[in-house]
Length: 408
Image (cartoon, rainbow, N blue to C red; front, side):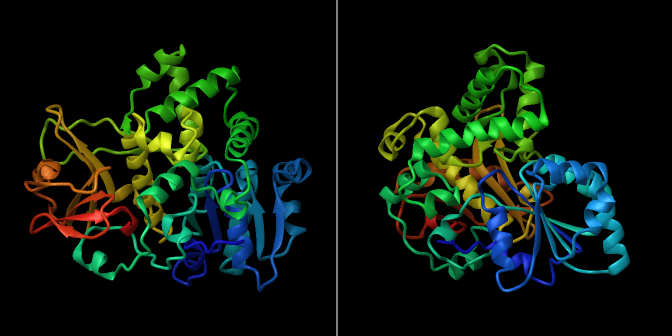
Protein backbone atom coordinates (compact mmCIF):
# COMPACT_ATOMS: atom_id res chain seq x y z
CA UNK A 1 0.00 0.00 0.00
CA UNK A 2 1.39 3.36 -1.04
CA UNK A 3 1.67 5.89 1.79
CA UNK A 4 1.28 9.38 0.35
CA UNK A 5 4.52 11.35 0.58
CA UNK A 6 4.39 15.07 1.33
CA UNK A 7 7.17 15.79 -1.16
CA UNK A 8 4.79 14.70 -3.92
CA UNK A 9 2.86 18.00 -3.76
CA UNK A 10 6.13 19.98 -3.78
CA UNK A 11 7.39 18.22 -6.91
CA UNK A 12 4.06 18.91 -8.62
CA UNK A 13 4.02 22.59 -7.67
CA UNK A 14 4.74 25.10 -10.48
CA UNK A 15 6.67 27.18 -7.97
CA UNK A 16 9.27 24.44 -7.55
CA UNK A 17 9.33 23.09 -11.11
CA UNK A 18 12.63 23.27 -13.02
CA UNK A 19 13.89 21.69 -16.20
CA UNK A 20 15.57 18.98 -14.13
CA UNK A 21 14.09 17.68 -10.88
CA UNK A 22 16.42 15.62 -8.69
CA UNK A 23 15.35 13.58 -5.66
CA UNK A 24 18.14 12.31 -3.41
CA UNK A 25 18.04 10.10 -0.35
CA UNK A 26 19.46 6.87 1.00
CA UNK A 27 18.45 3.53 -0.47
CA UNK A 28 14.90 2.34 0.21
CA UNK A 29 13.42 5.73 1.18
CA UNK A 30 10.93 5.52 -1.72
CA UNK A 31 12.43 7.87 -4.34
CA UNK A 32 11.43 5.81 -7.38
CA UNK A 33 7.99 5.02 -5.94
CA UNK A 34 7.40 8.72 -5.33
CA UNK A 35 8.19 9.67 -8.92
CA UNK A 36 6.06 6.81 -10.27
CA UNK A 37 3.16 8.04 -8.14
CA UNK A 38 3.68 11.57 -9.44
CA UNK A 39 3.23 10.25 -12.99
CA UNK A 40 0.56 7.62 -12.33
CA UNK A 41 -1.87 9.39 -14.69
CA UNK A 42 0.76 10.52 -17.21
CA UNK A 43 3.29 8.82 -19.44
CA UNK A 44 6.86 8.62 -18.19
CA UNK A 45 9.90 7.08 -19.83
CA UNK A 46 12.26 5.44 -17.37
CA UNK A 47 15.80 4.11 -17.23
CA UNK A 48 17.90 2.83 -14.33
CA UNK A 49 21.64 3.22 -14.19
CA UNK A 50 21.79 0.25 -11.84
CA UNK A 51 21.74 -1.56 -15.19
CA UNK A 52 25.40 -1.93 -16.15
CA UNK A 53 24.76 -1.76 -19.90
CA UNK A 54 22.74 1.44 -19.62
CA UNK A 55 25.28 2.93 -17.24
CA UNK A 56 28.12 2.21 -19.65
CA UNK A 57 26.28 3.91 -22.53
CA UNK A 58 25.35 6.92 -20.40
CA UNK A 59 28.98 7.37 -19.34
CA UNK A 60 30.75 6.71 -22.62
CA UNK A 61 28.29 8.26 -25.07
CA UNK A 62 25.78 10.36 -23.14
CA UNK A 63 24.61 12.30 -26.21
CA UNK A 64 23.46 9.15 -28.01
CA UNK A 65 22.08 7.75 -24.75
CA UNK A 66 19.80 10.75 -24.29
CA UNK A 67 18.75 11.23 -27.93
CA UNK A 68 17.33 7.70 -27.92
CA UNK A 69 14.92 8.63 -25.11
CA UNK A 70 11.99 11.03 -24.98
CA UNK A 71 10.90 13.32 -22.20
CA UNK A 72 9.60 13.34 -19.56
CA UNK A 73 12.39 10.96 -18.63
CA UNK A 74 13.12 9.43 -15.24
CA UNK A 75 16.75 8.38 -14.67
CA UNK A 76 17.20 6.31 -11.53
CA UNK A 77 20.59 6.26 -9.73
CA UNK A 78 21.70 9.15 -11.93
CA UNK A 79 24.85 9.79 -9.91
CA UNK A 80 26.54 6.90 -11.72
CA UNK A 81 26.82 8.91 -14.95
CA UNK A 82 27.52 12.60 -14.29
CA UNK A 83 28.87 12.76 -17.86
CA UNK A 84 25.29 13.16 -19.12
CA UNK A 85 24.43 16.22 -17.00
CA UNK A 86 25.83 18.74 -19.49
CA UNK A 87 23.61 17.21 -22.20
CA UNK A 88 20.58 17.62 -19.96
CA UNK A 89 21.52 21.30 -19.76
CA UNK A 90 21.66 21.58 -23.56
CA UNK A 91 18.18 20.07 -23.88
CA UNK A 92 16.67 22.28 -21.18
CA UNK A 93 18.26 25.43 -22.61
CA UNK A 94 17.05 24.58 -26.09
CA UNK A 95 13.48 23.51 -25.30
CA UNK A 96 12.76 25.50 -22.10
CA UNK A 97 10.81 22.40 -21.03
CA UNK A 98 9.88 22.25 -17.35
CA UNK A 99 9.97 18.83 -15.73
CA UNK A 100 11.82 17.33 -18.70
CA UNK A 101 14.06 15.13 -16.55
CA UNK A 102 13.51 13.52 -13.17
CA UNK A 103 16.62 12.13 -11.51
CA UNK A 104 17.01 10.07 -8.38
CA UNK A 105 20.16 9.08 -6.55
CA UNK A 106 21.32 7.59 -3.27
CA UNK A 107 24.62 9.49 -3.14
CA UNK A 108 23.54 13.02 -2.34
CA UNK A 109 26.86 14.84 -2.04
CA UNK A 110 28.40 13.37 -5.18
CA UNK A 111 25.23 14.00 -7.14
CA UNK A 112 24.80 17.53 -5.77
CA UNK A 113 28.36 18.50 -6.69
CA UNK A 114 27.97 17.38 -10.29
CA UNK A 115 24.48 18.84 -10.63
CA UNK A 116 25.50 22.23 -9.27
CA UNK A 117 28.46 22.39 -11.63
CA UNK A 118 26.56 21.31 -14.76
CA UNK A 119 22.97 22.48 -14.20
CA UNK A 120 23.17 25.63 -12.10
CA UNK A 121 19.82 27.42 -12.19
CA UNK A 122 18.15 24.61 -14.10
CA UNK A 123 17.75 21.96 -11.41
CA UNK A 124 15.64 21.59 -8.31
CA UNK A 125 17.18 19.25 -5.74
CA UNK A 126 14.98 17.66 -3.08
CA UNK A 127 15.82 15.33 -0.22
CA UNK A 128 13.60 12.36 0.65
CA UNK A 129 14.15 10.74 4.03
CA UNK A 130 12.11 7.82 5.32
CA UNK A 131 8.44 8.08 6.21
CA UNK A 132 7.60 10.87 8.62
CA UNK A 133 5.19 10.37 11.52
CA UNK A 134 2.81 12.72 9.72
CA UNK A 135 2.89 10.50 6.62
CA UNK A 136 2.45 7.30 8.65
CA UNK A 137 -0.57 8.85 10.38
CA UNK A 138 -2.08 10.17 7.13
CA UNK A 139 -1.66 13.77 8.30
CA UNK A 140 -1.58 16.16 5.33
CA UNK A 141 -0.12 19.07 7.32
CA UNK A 142 3.07 20.08 5.50
CA UNK A 143 4.66 23.11 7.15
CA UNK A 144 8.17 23.00 8.65
CA UNK A 145 8.24 22.68 12.41
CA UNK A 146 8.61 25.89 14.42
CA UNK A 147 7.35 25.90 18.03
CA UNK A 148 5.54 29.23 17.75
CA UNK A 149 1.88 30.02 18.42
CA UNK A 150 0.95 30.12 14.74
CA UNK A 151 2.33 26.66 14.04
CA UNK A 152 0.98 24.98 17.18
CA UNK A 153 -2.47 26.52 16.77
CA UNK A 154 -2.62 25.21 13.20
CA UNK A 155 -1.83 21.62 14.14
CA UNK A 156 -4.48 19.01 14.84
CA UNK A 157 -2.39 15.85 14.80
CA UNK A 158 -3.43 12.29 15.48
CA UNK A 159 -2.38 11.29 18.97
CA UNK A 160 0.41 8.73 19.08
CA UNK A 161 0.78 6.71 22.26
CA UNK A 162 3.90 6.33 24.35
CA UNK A 163 4.08 2.63 23.47
CA UNK A 164 3.67 3.37 19.76
CA UNK A 165 6.51 5.90 19.93
CA UNK A 166 9.05 3.23 20.89
CA UNK A 167 7.63 0.83 18.34
CA UNK A 168 8.16 3.46 15.63
CA UNK A 169 11.68 4.19 16.84
CA UNK A 170 12.55 0.50 16.73
CA UNK A 171 10.88 -0.15 13.38
CA UNK A 172 12.47 2.79 11.61
CA UNK A 173 11.06 4.72 8.68
CA UNK A 174 11.81 2.72 5.52
CA UNK A 175 8.57 2.38 3.52
CA UNK A 176 9.05 -1.34 2.76
CA UNK A 177 8.59 -2.15 6.45
CA UNK A 178 5.16 -0.49 6.30
CA UNK A 179 4.21 -1.89 2.90
CA UNK A 180 4.86 -5.41 4.19
CA UNK A 181 4.18 -5.62 7.96
CA UNK A 182 5.10 -9.33 7.94
CA UNK A 183 8.65 -8.51 6.83
CA UNK A 184 11.23 -9.69 9.34
CA UNK A 185 12.88 -6.65 10.94
CA UNK A 186 16.32 -8.18 11.40
CA UNK A 187 16.39 -9.73 7.94
CA UNK A 188 15.40 -6.42 6.33
CA UNK A 189 18.17 -4.43 8.01
CA UNK A 190 20.77 -7.16 7.54
CA UNK A 191 20.01 -7.16 3.82
CA UNK A 192 19.97 -3.36 3.80
CA UNK A 193 23.47 -3.12 5.28
CA UNK A 194 24.86 -5.81 2.97
CA UNK A 195 23.36 -4.15 -0.12
CA UNK A 196 24.56 -0.73 1.04
CA UNK A 197 28.16 -1.89 1.43
CA UNK A 198 28.16 -3.80 -1.85
CA UNK A 199 26.45 -1.16 -4.01
CA UNK A 200 26.92 2.29 -2.52
CA UNK A 201 30.07 2.17 -0.43
CA UNK A 202 32.22 0.48 -3.06
CA UNK A 203 31.06 3.05 -5.63
CA UNK A 204 32.34 5.88 -3.42
CA UNK A 205 35.49 4.55 -1.84
CA UNK A 206 37.61 1.41 -1.69
CA UNK A 207 37.05 0.59 1.97
CA UNK A 208 39.16 -2.56 1.92
CA UNK A 209 38.12 -4.27 5.14
CA UNK A 210 34.33 -4.71 5.11
CA UNK A 211 34.28 -6.06 8.67
CA UNK A 212 36.04 -2.94 9.94
CA UNK A 213 33.62 -0.76 8.01
CA UNK A 214 30.67 -2.55 9.62
CA UNK A 215 32.25 -2.02 13.05
CA UNK A 216 32.71 1.63 12.09
CA UNK A 217 28.99 1.92 11.26
CA UNK A 218 28.17 0.39 14.64
CA UNK A 219 30.46 2.85 16.42
CA UNK A 220 28.85 5.84 14.66
CA UNK A 221 25.33 4.56 15.38
CA UNK A 222 26.21 4.22 19.06
CA UNK A 223 27.18 7.91 19.08
CA UNK A 224 24.04 9.28 17.42
CA UNK A 225 23.10 12.49 19.21
CA UNK A 226 26.65 13.09 20.47
CA UNK A 227 29.37 15.55 19.53
CA UNK A 228 31.38 14.24 16.60
CA UNK A 229 34.62 12.74 17.92
CA UNK A 230 36.56 11.45 14.93
CA UNK A 231 39.60 10.45 16.96
CA UNK A 232 37.44 8.56 19.47
CA UNK A 233 35.69 6.55 16.75
CA UNK A 234 39.01 5.78 15.04
CA UNK A 235 40.59 4.63 18.30
CA UNK A 236 37.65 2.41 19.25
CA UNK A 237 37.80 0.37 16.05
CA UNK A 238 41.54 0.59 15.39
CA UNK A 239 41.77 2.68 12.24
CA UNK A 240 43.68 5.83 11.34
CA UNK A 241 41.97 9.18 11.79
CA UNK A 242 42.26 9.88 8.05
CA UNK A 243 40.49 6.59 7.27
CA UNK A 244 37.75 7.45 9.76
CA UNK A 245 37.26 10.86 8.16
CA UNK A 246 36.98 9.22 4.73
CA UNK A 247 34.45 6.70 5.96
CA UNK A 248 32.37 9.45 7.61
CA UNK A 249 32.30 11.16 4.22
CA UNK A 250 30.96 7.91 2.76
CA UNK A 251 28.10 7.83 5.27
CA UNK A 252 27.29 11.47 4.55
CA UNK A 253 27.47 10.96 0.78
CA UNK A 254 25.02 8.09 0.99
CA UNK A 255 22.56 9.96 3.23
CA UNK A 256 22.87 7.76 6.31
CA UNK A 257 24.06 10.43 8.76
CA UNK A 258 23.47 14.12 9.39
CA UNK A 259 25.91 16.56 10.96
CA UNK A 260 24.01 19.16 12.97
CA UNK A 261 26.00 22.41 13.19
CA UNK A 262 26.42 24.35 16.44
CA UNK A 263 25.00 27.82 16.82
CA UNK A 264 27.82 30.18 17.69
CA UNK A 265 26.96 33.79 17.05
CA UNK A 266 27.53 36.25 19.87
CA UNK A 267 25.61 34.21 22.45
CA UNK A 268 28.90 33.43 24.14
CA UNK A 269 32.51 33.14 23.12
CA UNK A 270 32.65 29.83 24.96
CA UNK A 271 30.34 28.04 22.51
CA UNK A 272 31.61 24.71 21.22
CA UNK A 273 32.02 24.61 17.44
CA UNK A 274 32.01 20.84 16.92
CA UNK A 275 28.92 19.40 15.14
CA UNK A 276 26.68 16.69 16.54
CA UNK A 277 26.30 13.49 14.55
CA UNK A 278 22.95 11.76 13.98
CA UNK A 279 21.84 8.65 12.16
CA UNK A 280 18.95 9.39 9.79
CA UNK A 281 16.95 6.26 10.62
CA UNK A 282 16.37 4.96 14.15
CA UNK A 283 15.57 1.43 12.94
CA UNK A 284 18.96 1.10 11.26
CA UNK A 285 20.54 2.67 14.33
CA UNK A 286 18.82 0.05 16.54
CA UNK A 287 19.93 -2.81 14.29
CA UNK A 288 23.55 -1.70 14.29
CA UNK A 289 23.65 -1.16 18.06
CA UNK A 290 21.79 -4.44 18.73
CA UNK A 291 18.71 -3.09 20.50
CA UNK A 292 16.33 -5.74 19.20
CA UNK A 293 12.94 -4.74 20.67
CA UNK A 294 11.05 -1.53 21.41
CA UNK A 295 11.06 -2.43 25.11
CA UNK A 296 14.85 -2.74 25.16
CA UNK A 297 15.20 0.68 23.55
CA UNK A 298 12.72 2.34 25.91
CA UNK A 299 14.38 1.05 29.09
CA UNK A 300 17.98 0.91 27.87
CA UNK A 301 20.91 3.24 28.37
CA UNK A 302 20.50 4.72 24.86
CA UNK A 303 16.81 5.64 25.17
CA UNK A 304 17.59 9.36 25.33
CA UNK A 305 19.82 9.17 22.26
CA UNK A 306 17.15 7.26 20.34
CA UNK A 307 14.47 9.79 21.27
CA UNK A 308 16.65 12.76 20.35
CA UNK A 309 17.57 11.13 17.03
CA UNK A 310 13.90 10.41 16.29
CA UNK A 311 12.90 14.02 17.01
CA UNK A 312 15.76 15.42 14.94
CA UNK A 313 14.75 13.21 12.01
CA UNK A 314 11.11 14.31 12.27
CA UNK A 315 12.12 17.97 12.30
CA UNK A 316 14.39 17.45 9.30
CA UNK A 317 11.59 15.68 7.43
CA UNK A 318 9.20 18.57 8.11
CA UNK A 319 11.63 20.86 6.25
CA UNK A 320 12.74 18.54 3.45
CA UNK A 321 9.13 17.48 2.76
CA UNK A 322 8.18 21.14 2.33
CA UNK A 323 10.98 21.60 -0.20
CA UNK A 324 13.19 23.51 2.27
CA UNK A 325 16.81 22.74 3.08
CA UNK A 326 17.06 22.82 6.91
CA UNK A 327 20.78 23.58 7.07
CA UNK A 328 20.14 27.33 7.46
CA UNK A 329 17.47 26.82 10.11
CA UNK A 330 18.47 24.06 12.49
CA UNK A 331 21.32 24.10 15.04
CA UNK A 332 22.20 23.08 18.58
CA UNK A 333 23.99 24.92 21.37
CA UNK A 334 26.63 23.75 23.83
CA UNK A 335 29.35 25.67 25.62
CA UNK A 336 32.49 24.80 27.54
CA UNK A 337 30.64 25.29 30.83
CA UNK A 338 28.28 22.41 30.06
CA UNK A 339 25.23 24.51 29.14
CA UNK A 340 23.30 22.86 26.31
CA UNK A 341 20.20 23.34 24.17
CA UNK A 342 19.32 20.23 22.17
CA UNK A 343 18.12 22.15 19.10
CA UNK A 344 17.75 25.75 18.04
CA UNK A 345 15.53 26.69 15.10
CA UNK A 346 16.28 30.01 13.45
CA UNK A 347 13.09 31.28 11.81
CA UNK A 348 11.52 34.64 11.07
CA UNK A 349 14.29 36.57 12.79
CA UNK A 350 13.91 34.59 16.02
CA UNK A 351 15.78 31.80 17.78
CA UNK A 352 13.51 29.02 19.03
CA UNK A 353 15.20 26.81 21.67
CA UNK A 354 14.10 23.17 21.92
CA UNK A 355 14.77 20.57 24.58
CA UNK A 356 13.98 16.85 24.23
CA UNK A 357 12.80 14.90 27.28
CA UNK A 358 11.67 11.31 27.69
CA UNK A 359 9.52 12.20 30.70
CA UNK A 360 5.98 13.59 30.38
CA UNK A 361 6.21 16.31 33.04
CA UNK A 362 9.09 18.71 32.26
CA UNK A 363 9.54 21.74 34.51
CA UNK A 364 11.43 25.04 34.53
CA UNK A 365 14.71 23.33 35.38
CA UNK A 366 14.62 21.68 31.96
CA UNK A 367 14.73 25.01 30.12
CA UNK A 368 17.28 26.94 32.15
CA UNK A 369 19.72 26.94 29.22
CA UNK A 370 17.17 28.74 27.03
CA UNK A 371 18.45 32.02 28.50
CA UNK A 372 21.47 31.81 26.19
CA UNK A 373 19.23 32.73 23.23
CA UNK A 374 18.17 36.02 24.82
CA UNK A 375 21.25 38.16 24.25
CA UNK A 376 21.86 37.62 20.55
CA UNK A 377 22.31 40.84 18.55
CA UNK A 378 21.07 39.35 15.27
CA UNK A 379 17.99 37.41 16.38
CA UNK A 380 15.38 37.91 19.06
CA UNK A 381 14.31 35.22 21.50
CA UNK A 382 11.43 33.21 20.02
CA UNK A 383 9.04 30.67 21.47
CA UNK A 384 10.71 27.61 22.94
CA UNK A 385 9.51 24.07 23.48
CA UNK A 386 10.20 20.96 25.51
CA UNK A 387 9.28 18.10 23.21
CA UNK A 388 8.29 15.13 25.31
CA UNK A 389 5.75 12.34 25.85
CA UNK A 390 2.99 14.50 27.33
CA UNK A 391 -0.42 14.30 25.65
CA UNK A 392 -1.16 18.04 25.54
CA UNK A 393 0.45 21.40 24.97
CA UNK A 394 1.11 22.95 28.38
CA UNK A 395 2.56 26.45 28.95
CA UNK A 396 5.75 26.60 30.99
CA UNK A 397 6.50 30.32 30.69
CA UNK A 398 5.26 33.26 28.65
CA UNK A 399 7.40 32.04 25.75
CA UNK A 400 7.85 28.30 26.31
CA UNK A 401 5.58 25.27 26.22
CA UNK A 402 5.55 21.53 26.73
CA UNK A 403 4.84 20.06 23.28
CA UNK A 404 3.91 16.41 22.54
CA UNK A 405 6.32 14.71 20.13
CA UNK A 406 3.57 14.04 17.60
CA UNK A 407 3.10 17.79 17.03
CA UNK A 408 6.37 17.92 15.03
